Length: 303
Ligand SMILES: NC(=O)C1=CN([C@@H]2O[C@H](COP(=O)(O)OP(=O)(O)OC[C@H]3O[C@@H](n4cnc5c(N)ncnc54)[C@H](OP(=O)(O)O)[C@@H]3O)[C@@H](O)[C@H]2O)C=CC1
Ligand SMILES: CC(=O)N[C@@H](CCC(=O)OP(=O)(O)O)C(=O)O
Image (cartoon, rainbow, N blue to C red; front, side, top):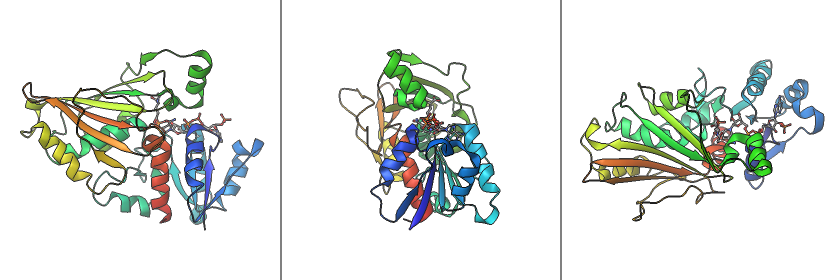
């Protein structure tokens, strides 16, 4: 029986992981309740009893938990961190099993895995296979536009929208320093800093990530179908990722995959204008957070 402690179990991501793990055989979930939830000594003691700790905490608290585990030396459990704290940190493996051949095995063997951010899950899924196939140059001037449901901002943003009725729609990150840019660069394999423009709408969950492309600026001559085929080939054995034909009406809404762990990729475009738009759709709480975490937990515990 594999023992798991979710540090931050009462938060948005922690609850989603708990819910998904309850029906999984071969797992025992260990919890801290009441005041002990945030007590470093209680958290460290819990770490001595489990095989894997999942961190669903703000960045500073996640760093504190990693330091607590380090005090246990060789008895430290494996760690999966859902925060942003270790996404590009040395010694950590990025928890996107579909990244490239052999990556799922790297996650399975790792002591420390960082769960990807919701936006990078969509953007890296679209970009990386096309860069590896030589269609998009590593220094291509990439722009990433995205819209998320408000649960992406955790408990505080959920409260702001559900109690105070937040804005219907809002662009943010316009200072171009969003915390997800380093992982977009590292795992998208980009050498030029992408322009990332996130936004949030007044709906709880669901996400679209879109990347416009002028086909005549690509590194290799490509039609819209070539880009779609390259994505299809890359994800042919991926259980959670599907490359979909585009809708004839040219529309796509963000909530269709809510409460699933699926990620859908599409290549919209207009061949006559030599223009395309790559689009990823996912549930920010599914493949964008808790669903991806459960995928990584199963790999890390060999379930
Ligand atoms: N929401 C999303 O879509 C995604 C979130 N993430 C990341 O996952 C992490 C958690 O986010 P999310 O679930 O949204 O956040 P929430 O704010 O919903 O939950 C955070 C939880 O951590 C608890 N907590 C805070 N400080 C400590 C501490 N020192 N010790 C123990 N517990 C503590 C909070 O307690 P209390 O209940 O008392 O406030 C809360 O339950 C963040 O790093 C976030 O960046 C990653 C991907 C997507
Ligand atoms: C709508 C909203 O505020 N979203 C969050 C990102 C949510 C997420 O996936 O980020 P982490 O995994 O890095 O926490 C933001 O833009 O900061």
